[in-house]
Length: 373
Image 1 (cartoon, rainbow, N blue to C red):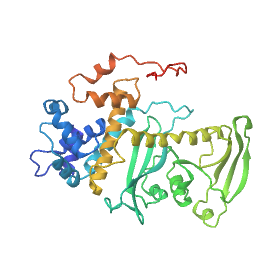
Image 2 (cartoon, helix red, strand yellow):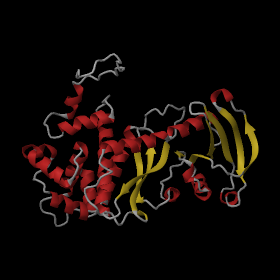
Image 3 (tube, helix red, strand yellow):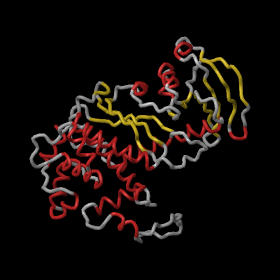
Image 4 (tube, one colour):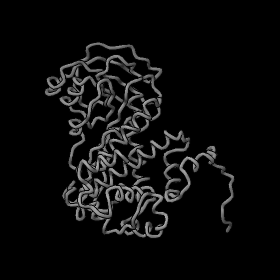
């Protein structure tokens, strides 16, 4: 609460506000995220029906949809972005000891973006194509705990590679990304910042081999080379040696070529690092399925960014809850339980402590149908 209050003061969010504060707005929007409300009218009706229980959530007044809509339009979205960053810092410390499944102590990030389609008639500021609108969520995911440490919301026209200019680079960390982020000038800036990158090479990538390391074909490695770029632009924008690793993925019968500026790790570890990049795809799929970031309660840029940042705050709060209470349930299960207990007086720890975790049961193909015809 102290951190949230500082964020509100920083942007004067409660200036001349008498009844519906920024905290009330955050609680209403978090309630909508946790309980899957469809619209502002849905939020208003649900909170009105739960009137006697609103104080359990900290709401001291009933909420009208017009008041909430005005708050989403006018309250600075940076209040909730800064609050989310504070929560992310807390979650990062809690998950710092998570096992990556690799013999690696460094921090590993996966960088990618996802596109959210919008109606251009309702969101004219989010122009993507001539007749289509969209926004992009550029996300840097810490693979220890799947915590989104960096999120940038842009219109759909911003190319992914431009986000490399905005990234906070941590020396010694690994940044795993697909080949859409290949720009050798920007990758060289990352190299100069003493950070490591792992990406896939493009098909017409021009290079010259300096020497080769021993590769173990039994584990899928086809070659492990130290190279220099020879392209017209890449030779000058990236003058240092690179490492080129060819890996055969037997599961999908495909050949993958990786580029990295780390010359020390085993080649198989580099391949496994890139495989771990899939976690950011799962993160996007999870938040799109279980949080409200595909349909919005307002049409302005401020309202959209407010809703996205509050959704991220809810995701990180659930991750913090899971770690601090040492819960064994998944984030999805915790979210489902909170959706029906958010207005109850039962302490959260009690809700989960007396609840046995059911073991996964394999489907029984001999099970009869529910209704006999």
